[in-house]
Image (tube, rainbow, N blue to C red):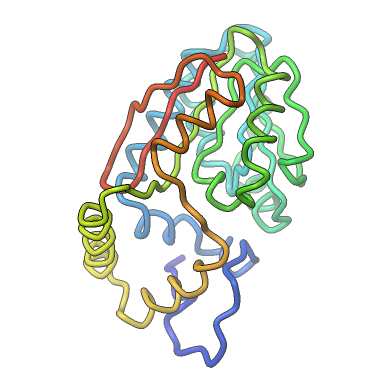
Amino acid sequence: MRDEVYRHSQPHIVDFAFTEAVAAVFPDMIRRSVPGYETMIPVTGLIAARHLGEHQHAYDLGCSLGATTLAILQHNNTPTIRVTGLDNSAAMIAGARDRITDPRADFVEQDILNSDVTGATVVVLNLVMQFIAPKARLPLLRQLREQMSQEGLLIVSEKVAHTDPWLHDLYEQTHIQWKKANGYSDLEVSQKRTALENVMQIDTEQTHHARFEQAGFTRAIQWYRCMNWASFLVYP
């Protein structure tokens, strides 16, 4: 279904939320809004799948409709792996359950700040941290570091800011033009930016690396970059 959530003028723009209306159009929304999404998710799934062996468990935190979960499953034929998707949006979890019937997957409606990933071999946070309150981000990473396997892998994908104002503005303006090239109107771009203003708070690449270290992870590698989107492989 085509994303037309912000097509018509709204007298009062409420904060963006993952409602039933958003869930219904989410695949189209994210494909037309995040440059490189159609590369980031399949390759994330491939990397995660290669890290999973028999009887091992992956968690897709903030799973939305389960795109990353599906990508992991498609790249790993081992029948004994498990992938659990967690999201606090009932609409997203319902959609994920409808879309993905692989018995190796399960989906749980839960705030990821209250999650338990004890023993996890892979944990994925794809475009999720930016929607978590900044003060809660380091505690979450510390919790994941303590709970996941010592041989585990954390994958974090985010929109990132830049310390160079000129470069930051270049990417932001290019992103706006890219969304317009994908069929969004000026009104849609403007209204969605307003809706996201208080909800989506992004960090610099340097902040991400510093936080990984503070949480106790020993190594973080940026494996992917497309303008102001990046993905990191993070190791205990």
